[in-house]
Length: 109
Image (cartoon, rainbow, N blue to C red; front, side, top):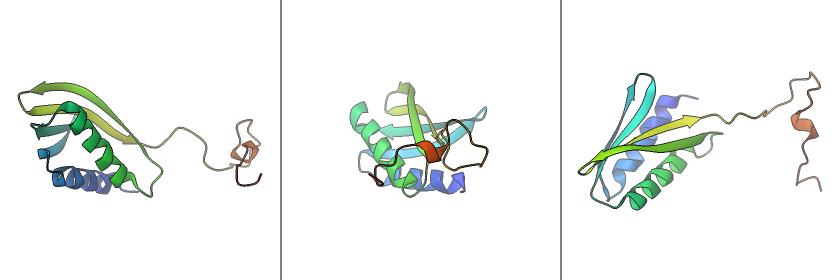
């Protein structure tokens, strides 16, 4: 899975919304930030970020996290990252106590 493709889809979708004037992402000190220019209220902007994230992550086992950093006039900065969930998704065969085979499956009941 190429994270750059996910970021490209995310930024492209974010820029397609009418309330967003311009959106771009930059990596500073290894931490990804998104810079969003918008005149819309912050709640609408955060909803647009969530929808664009969902669109970019569709079909992948990823999560995202968005944290507000600062704003100046109509430029808003968020720390945004895509990450893989920290849970076992397969059986390694070592009979671990948190093995995925031991989880209850609602489809088997």
